[in-house]
Image 1 (cartoon, rainbow, N blue to C red):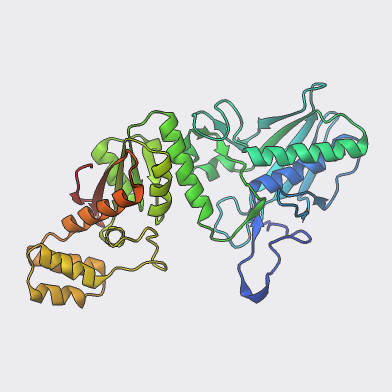
Image 2: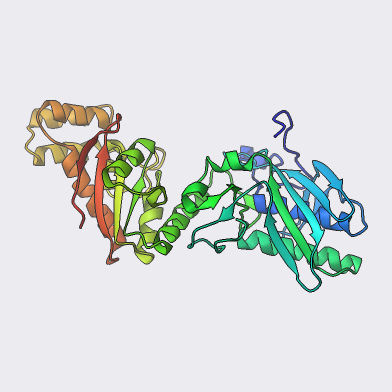
Length: 377
């Protein structure tokens, strides 16, 4: 990847500066791949590369994309778009997404190939079956529609082989869920609307759901949802879980549990630090610091119930953080982690309702040590 090159902001892009200081929206990999495929197909069939190239998104928007690079040979044409994810912290922001087009077998319609940097699906449970390029259904349909549009305009058959590649995609994929989901060799080409909403929770929750789908398809009996790397490592070591049983829950306990309610697995271990698990114990399902906070009064009440005195209770109410409250309780000989874990498990069970899922909770310290864990129930 040419790191000195910045993503191109095409005309009428959602990445243009929005009003009122709002965050810029960007393009999905699927939208970029569609634009590149449309431009290359037009060039392959005797036309010039349209620059900018306009596509239609699933909701009817018609954005235009500037081409970063083009090339063609006797029986192929290639166009490249540089992805602009707007203000979203997307690992593919700035990635070069290329489509190489060749004419397909007569009557064969549109077929897809994974070029360098695009993954192949190897596990069941994803929207695309094993053995296929990791190009999701909506981007595939967007590309078919674009090929049909150009073919009708030029009077040529809509039989095309589309090869999508992403420069550096295999390295980018290592920073995503793809390895755990059984997608090998590169990133996935994603998107349901064509537009990236900055800092959206939707993409993360979508990944949690797909992780559950893969675990169910593989027949796993036990998965773990963790708030971070430390707790993930601890729960994997404790239960000897394979990588694809590890669901990067982050702050989205609700997104995990509500999906399990309708897509159950036999057992879930929820693992996290004391502060995050305190929020879950309080009934919060979004554990982000901006959307829920630790209630020190709640912790002081648990300390009293565990045998602490009023001096400890007052000290906990005056603590600066959950970690300080935990340290105060420990110094007084009170195990505060245990009742927090029990209450957190109760919140999880309540959220799951009557789903046939056994729940246990593990609380991990900052060094990765296990403070406490509940029995499944």
